[in-house]
Image (cartoon, rainbow, N blue to C red):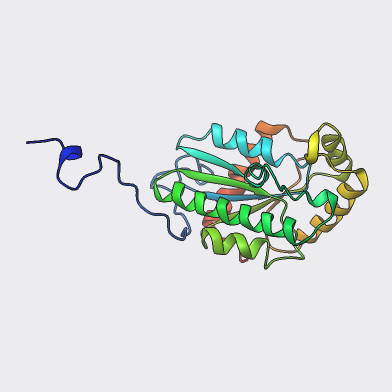
Length: 222
């Protein structure tokens, strides 16, 4: 009998389930209440530039027991090599379109990973005063099971971290302060907020696990 890959009409490629809207996860049977390491999750880490989103997301993804992918909006946005619309040079229709494209691409990627048993953590600077194009857009692109968490250290910490950045990811102090001020609008939103001003990356990842465990048990309304 010929192998399956040689069967008539077969391409020899592994068939992967298509990605669909992500539903709210359930913790595995027998898991500790604060143990999310064995649960397939879709997480959105929100915060201003310099909050440590990328470092925390990478560390968290690398130290889980189940396969986990980190999908960075900035990385995907920078796939545009010619015609890159840098909002630091002025927010316009081109920069907004590229942000929207990047968010949609990240959402498609997350749904496909999750459909195949791979957790995802996405990071983005979502503003609370623009829910339709920000948080609402992520919910449409990924699904109702997406768990948003806000990472919001103090302004002085954000300024210090931003000063260590380079290229188009480094902002002016004035822009950092403005973004940080807008991010304060998440207080009172009902979303979980982590102040990692005094926490290193591993400690922040542990707090993130605790926050996600509570979110699974009692999903935030957003």
